[in-house]
Amino acid sequence: MRQSFLLLPLGLLVTGLFAGEDRTARSRPDKARPADPARGAKAAPYFDAGEFIRQYDKNKDGYLSKAELPERFRHNFARLDANKDGKISRAELEKGAAYLLPRRRPLEVVYAMIEMSDCDECCAEELQMLYDLLRKLDTNKDGKLQASEMRTARTVIVKKRVDAIFKALDANKDGKISRAEAKGMVKRNFDELDTNKDGFIQRNELMRAASEKPAKPPRRKGDRTRSKAPDRPSGR
Figure (spheres, rainbow, N blue to C red):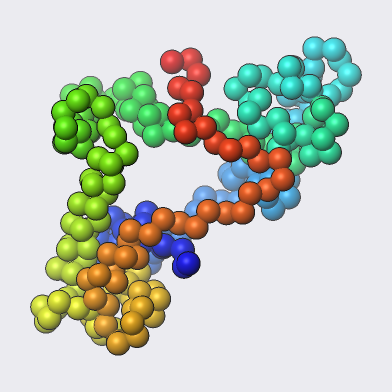
């Protein structure tokens, strides 16, 4: 199954449809990126593995056991302990430094808006919009969000975005997008979107591409299954 390239960038595709460059392709300078254990990259320059071990190595043996590793990082102990000897060396820590990054959760966006806002009135307005949206998702009004309600809302959102794309690109209003009409990501991925190879992108083809979930990367040895209900961010 082809991986959906529209699932996440679809909103950007609508708002930046006529941009000369793909904004989603921009990235930070290499020196600002954290280490990538999957590629065997070196630790980011701002991370001092030796100092980290000195801070938490209670028995002063030069290694970190699972008990010595800060609790917020223990879920990644198996990934950091590459040789499976039950302790983490400096070399393993440097190679797996990215696993010490905090797990990101959507809820952190709300916390950040509250804690870091320099305009309480503006922030309150944005949070009210978010609150109103969540209330709309709760169609049975039981005060909880169900998976079925999320799926229904996703379908509505995708349809609206696809409608916006057709409104922007379907110049002759014939209900399909030709290669000449296509722009931006639609133009660059035209052949993949045109699944029936008739030279046009139909609404159902764009809906299908936008609704597909990205392919899951293969699990590496030592990876643990993520919890469906992760703990709240520490310190909350």
